[in-house]
Image (cartoon, rainbow, N blue to C red; front, side):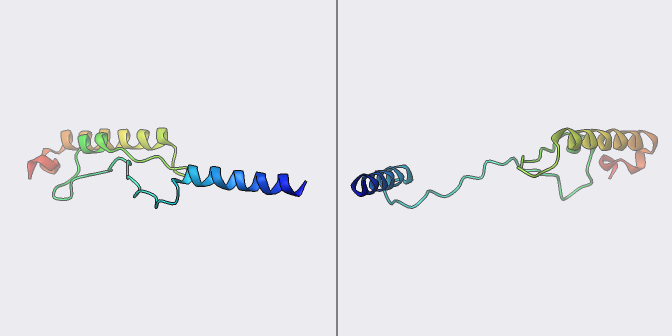
Length: 92
């Protein structure tokens, strides 16, 4: 009985070593998250808000809610720019 237990533990350890890469260190993690880049040198435009994409997280925000808010902000900026062209970011 003990012999089988030791063999099972050794087999599991061997499988774990093979799965881990035979003792080699792990490769550096690749950051594949999208960049939520917005221009820092000028005012935001409605198109800037439409292009923003946030990365997904386990305990993050609901993507549909963030998209709805960004769409609303973009629409409000377009309305403000249409009402007062002097306040438009491109007018500077």
